[in-house]
Amino acid sequence: MALKAAIVPVTAFQQNCTLLFDEETKHGVVVDPGGDVDRILEAVKQIGMTVDGILLTHGHLDHAGGADELREKLGVKITGPHIADKFLLDGITAQAKQYGLADMRAVTPDTWLVEGETVDIAGVTFNVLHCPGHSPGSVVFVNVAAGIALVGDVLFQGSIGRTDFPYGNTEQLISVVRKKLFPLGDDIAFICGHGPASTFGDERRTNPFVGESA
Image (tube, rainbow, N blue to C red; front, side):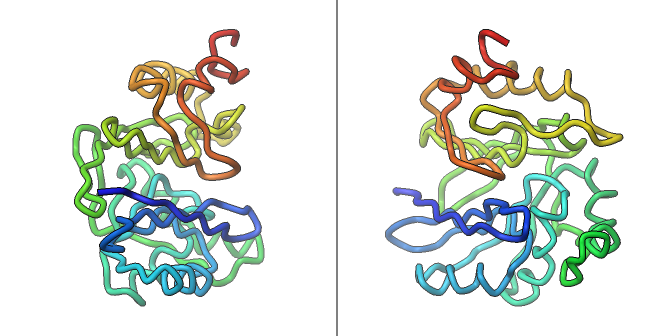
């Protein structure tokens, strides 16, 4: 099976909502539908994709604000993140109003995730890693054999997720990247929540926050 990714930038935060699907069967999942649900559905239609479920990497509104509406319209289930982000998911509606984003909804996933569990994406098994620091319940989905990871806002090309929230922890975030992600292999390509994709190897060598020279 060959998994293919399509990125749909959503909301004023330009968050990378990812459609990850099997190129042949067109079955797949929507990862982090933060908003602009009609735009996501149009991309799904253009691909001819059958959405089997919704995955959330963490509870910030730009990643999860459209999840409840999308679940309602597609009749699928939401999986993730870790339950430590429940307070963020519960507060989406109130926080969205502060940004003038009235269409976002608070959401409760059908299934919370913990490290060591797996999720199925079009017949491909992804391992779940709990990677707090940016948010307490952030998770990463990774398949080492396929060489792909979905990291949310844990790691970016040339940067890491914000930790200046009351619940953020810079040392914790740096630690999980170095101890959980980089050891998985330099060749693993990752899709992050904002900006371009990269590889663990490139970030290990050059990232000013978590790289070898940091």
